Image (cartoon, rainbow, N blue to C red; front, side, top):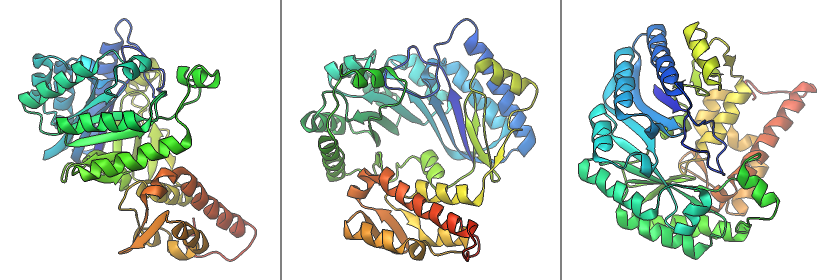
Length: 395
């Protein structure tokens, strides 16, 4: 099983971010920690020390928690669950919040063995535009300190497609990153989320983004460069040295069961899914009364199939056709023969060794491709509803 710890706090809200987070006020952090520890114990009692292979602290900004609090949370997890000796324990951090020897050493001693730092860019003007409180020099210093202290598995987060960014600047970022030698890189295309300051600035014309053609070049040429430097492109946004793929996220993409702790955290267990209350007070109340997880929805076959297709096609390995048959009793290739033929003709998909995967050009337009596959599924469902013959387990 995978465990996810959502830490909902940030020092300030980034203008492009739509994730659930808040600036802590008063005793909010202590209220959160008390509820979190109780929730972990609650699920340990319910499930009976099930094996855990990964723990991931995400947010928000998990590094806002004192390292002693992280240690306390991990101690509670080890008491409640059978955490594997070689478990991957990741923590997301901003450079400015883990910039001391005491903090980084404390995280290592607590058991954190994978650090994921949000660099976002190496360009000073871009960092200022994003409202990031650290400089590129600060970020490099923290990376080097973490390395010196013993972190042997470090991921760096970057964003491409940023305002005023062009291919040349993006490739300069990548060259600077590769010189540092992180084991893992997450390179996300900027998404303009609704109701964010960035979305309002773009809509008002105050900020211009690279056009689709330029963004396509950033994705394609950036991935090619990283592969030439020894990084495996194993998921749309993720690159790793061999053996350093993120085990936690890979578990998500492969359909592993997971428990999410904290406000707004999502869990999927035994075919059921639930989301914790977003509001801290409501979350703490649900934990106190033992009602977390009580309002779970049972995932329908159709939902499970859509998720299988969506998550597996994010990876460069792709969808194992046999997995689709095992779930539905049907043949994915036959069900989508004409669409797959058209995508293959346009060099957007490939089929080999029993896996259907998207090419790099296909990954670039993956959302559009998934919409077409899902449209085919909806058409089959409509056919069943109208009385057309349906195969066993058709989603």
